[in-house]
Length: 335
Image 1 (cartoon, rainbow, N blue to C red):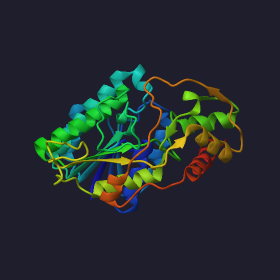
Image 2 (tube, one colour):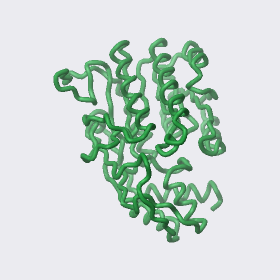
Image 3 (cartoon, rainbow, N blue to C red):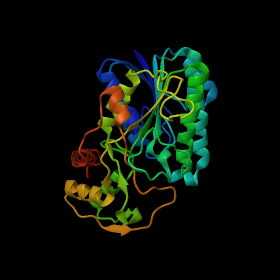
């Protein structure tokens, strides 16, 4: 089948596109190659895809309404996997307008395109950030998430609400995936693993926020890609368990579903750094700093819903995933 993957030059988007191509799907990749981080890395990811049979690419901004209308009018996509977004909790404090354009206007264009072109299933990226001020662990898709602590998280919560309205009004099957701290080869330079590895290799100090007491449910990129593809194959349907007198946020009388994709094993930040030190073969110099605005103490995914629905749960040990990243980083940057 033909699948539209937005954000195809991004970290997760490229991995998902490869996974789809591996099994023989036709993939149309879309990305605007923004300069939020080094476009050379995005172009390098894209170059690996463009040599593969069944892949075609369109450089386009999802917030460009007329161009997106023409894309959906021309294309006939069985599935849309929407991974394009303005990412980053901290950057959303500095530049909220880019989040409104990409994550709200852009997502509306995706919903409208799917609605009018008969897409059979829309799968879109949400985020563990939506859990915000929640402290009950592990985080469950059945939990209330009405207290985001960053504008980025608020846009992702808005995506879930927008998706539900289209599922209800137009019976568009939609599935939202809450990703938990994705890491691995070809990762984003603004993520901790990338910055820590770069600085440790260079002998420069790393900034360790919350004095290293954070806990994160780090999830390896291959596990994420597998979970996304499996979720795309399971088209969302109305739930017979829906009770309007006691509504569960994860299900609906509309064709709507939410899943966490996390490793289900939170790791303390200092242990994460120790694993990087082991893989690099060098000790880190650490600047211990307080918690940053918009940050949370811990993330921990309850993945029962994903496991029950698609028969899969992430399982890559953090030591293995970090070792693979460091090996890629040394090769890619000649470090």
